[in-house]
Length: 170
Image (cartoon, rainbow, N blue to C red; front, top):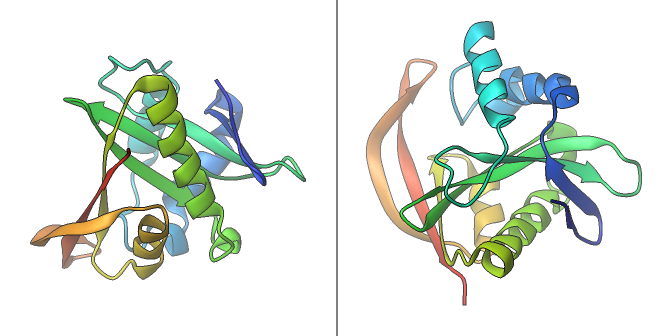
């Protein structure tokens, strides 16, 4: 499978993507409002799980590497996990690619692909309170804030609310 946009190509994660995956899950600027740094063992396990081929009856995440078409450089990951017909989406980009529209472009393309090829029409995203950049990406991709769950989780010893976004593709 391959998803192509004007500026990006998204393909399933491969073993060669380990350096990117590791950077995205350990770099402070990326994870500060997402999660605490995982242990090496936790990260390896998560990576191995993301390499499992995905199908629309799978209970694990589809993980796609986001690649700049012009240069071939991998700049992040995106994906979805399907539960009871609803897809939770997620994405992580390297900080040097923030604010350039790549998050929105990759998420919009993922949603369009899921609707066209997998008949998925309900999408959800969970964003940590204060992650304004991710909230903007979701809004530009057609998602709307539906709920705020106070004190949903802890990052670096601080409690945060979750902002729950939904999108219904038509």
